[in-house]
Length: 602
Image (cartoon, rainbow, N blue to C red; front, side, top):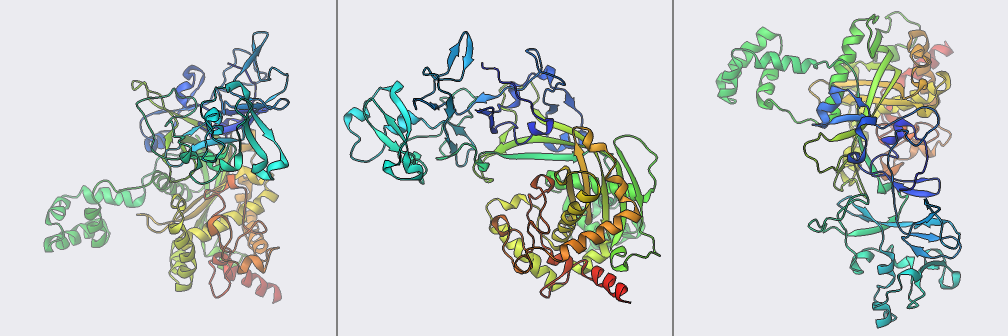
């Protein structure tokens, strides 16, 4: 085992250097094995019941860490060399051999040249497996006329070379793998074609590089040759939760009251009959709700299906609403929020203040992020769990990291949001992104782009860009969490902008102070004013096809895009028009700037 010393931030052990990721470190190409390889004694456990409940049976553990200089006994993570095939920079010899020098592993060829990992690897299209391209076998395959018996039965394993020559063309055609034993030569341009590996009878092994071959386990999916650093080689599936007192949403508490009522069993037994309506009215009168609510609880059953992220957000939304009602937070712990309401008599535009239902200054918040697993090549591929160990007596380990920070929570008025999103023009505009999300093979993982989500998501981006100038934090250090769903039992309409880091930058106090009324409202107005005119207008405002898979409408790097690490949807599902209006589309906050300009003129 070769010892390579390289330091990572704790957050990087989740992504981009998490389990299953192919990374370049100090000229080496490495891959991180699953958590069954971790030394559990040096990996501290992280407690977050809210997150672990959604992940399932297991334990959250932080990667081993240390401060100061690393020594031989320092806790560390293992990384596996991948791909194993490398070529020499000097003599071009291509092999899987690893040499030693004076008893230590050495990454140099016998001629003294440095060994460079091959650029291409083979990825399973559906099974999320990855493996080396068997270069010797591939070089001696093909269907052209020069595949003679000498080529077919060649055993010159040590005479394979990776050469570059422009005699055969440019690009991949100039890069060739040749055998000096049988004189067979094959260009890389024959490697990257559709089903090229399948035609050469090269099959998927059904394992990851750090796993032992399993003869009884086969994978029937086809391989595709890709560059080892391609983005699609590693699609992390992570889940994060705010460590808050788990609050049950109001709808859940109401549903509990309905189920606990003496007459509820008779409502369920009647199964939509005339007695059910009469009994539902009696229950509704006693609990102060509508008969429709009672019948909805009876029809839903006990286990409504939820995605883990939306389920987490429902609890967080309820916790924030509870904090906003209590005003100044004198409690301790890892969730401290001071709530305030926008004053009725204010010098700020009523078009803005009437739409804000409350603001919370999040003085302290703890976020825990965990890696559930990863996919390769496509978001439709199989999920590979972060723990692949075969010991069933031990609980699986999820790589996790805890981060502390601060933030600003904004709640928008539900009645105003609902009235706006029911406008036909608004629904038609949001429907464009809804159709594109449906037709995309991977976009189903994004939140449904209903009007409120697109508008509040865009507002969050605009505010992040403005806060980066005033808070002292880098733009990439700010993150968003959007609560905007009308199809939940409790409708949500709010955004959280926060900073959470595993170091001191997460608690500097520069963000929470900007949540005060005299600072936040001017920042909101400045953010809207910045977005009113983009440097790429009129191209940006008139474009309906922007971003990956055209999942943005009027949004670009000049107005609404932020760092992808800051965005829940990776800079997708954004539209300035649904915020500020345009092209006969009424924006949610379009009359804010108009009111300011009218006041300024008067």
